[in-house]
Length: 185
Image (spheres, rainbow, N blue to C red):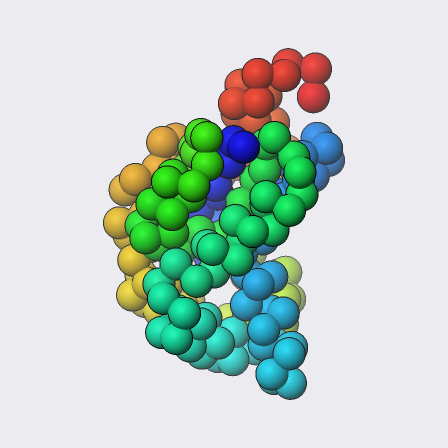
C-alpha cells in the first residue's frame, strides 16, 4: 500500500487538500478523527482543549505513534492501494508510516500565519474555539511539542497555499496525479 501524508500547521489547508483527494476517488484517513472519536467515547465536548488533552493522553498511554498506528489500521482496512492520511503531527508518526507501507510520501501544506488565522476564524469548527493570535500560538506550541517541526523537515514536497482556494485545489490535484501514476483521475 502507498500512503501520501498531509502535514501542516492549523488552518494551512490540509482539510481542503483531503477534500480534493476524496473528490478524486481516493481513500482519506483523517488522524484528527481518531482523536475526535476517542473524545466522543469519553463523553467530552470536541473543544480544542479537550481534543488536545485526549491527543496527549493517547500518546502518553499508548505511545507517541498511537494515532499513527490506529490510522494505519484504518488505511489497511480500506483495502485500497493508495490512501491519503491527513494530519500527521510528529516525526515518530512519519517514521511509523514509512516503516509500515510500501511507499510513503509526506507533503507539507504551507500557508502564512496571517492567512491561517483568518481561515481558522472563518471556518467555525468546534475545536477552533475563540480564534486569536494567542490561541493560535498556544495550539501551534502544543503541536510542535508533539514533534511537528521535525516532521515538517522530513516532508518530501511542499504545496504553498498563498493564493486562491482553486489554486490550492489545482496544486493538490496535480501532485496527487503525479504520485498516483494515474493521469486520468
